[in-house]
Image (cartoon, rainbow, N blue to C red; front, top):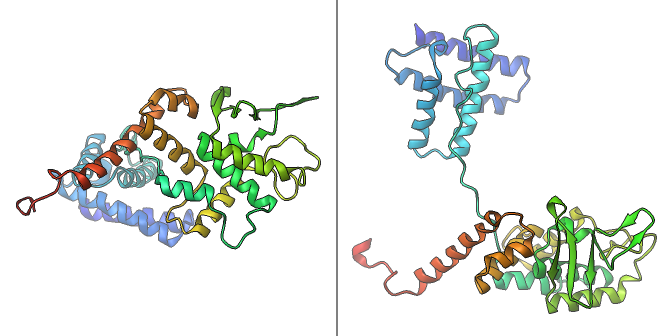
Length: 321
């Protein structure tokens, strides 16, 4: 009887999702697929218990079986979420005293490594002019200076957008970040209101100098921002993102390039060259070195690729196949 009762409850719940909660048919089908896994699991248990007899122990066993079967943590989390909603519905009907999924967590998701461009692609993105555009126009000179600075100093896009051409304190206004031309540095206030100064490379300084030579043509009401749109307003993080993405696409870079990719590329390439994790931490403005250590994984991946390609003992022989 439990099998028929389980199927009937499941059918009623899916009808509830479609008719009362007005979920899209595609969404209801996804719920049905995930909950049929719960149905199959209940059928595999000794005694084939009804859904109303499922306990937290059973749900933990289900999660463990999915994990052992190679299902990724994201999919396990989705299935547990579907089960949680179903058991919440049973609890609201008074059919179970508590939700057995409560307190059951999916396996931790592997934190994806940040994506970094190769050194060649990074240099292309920040140095090559956009095809079909006047490289000496104010807009393109501004883009070049922004992109060079992102890669040169590893700034967050919000920090870049907040830069002023120089320090200013005017009435209630005070600069949150600014350029030190003489010292070839930028000073920014990052996360947690932490202030830091970051060196700016020679190529970036040259690009900034070229931009500053024409910047006055766009300055209107606000003289402070370092980077300006064609309308003379401060460059926003979103506009910077869109400009960088369009620029990389025009160059044919086979990656989704956004400002954080250049930040990752900066960190990865500096670490590969110097091996100085503490210095990279300071330049990125990370409060904890643990946040910076992810780039050691990137560096190791690159070293492993070089080893596999170059070391004669790394190459597989016919007996290894």
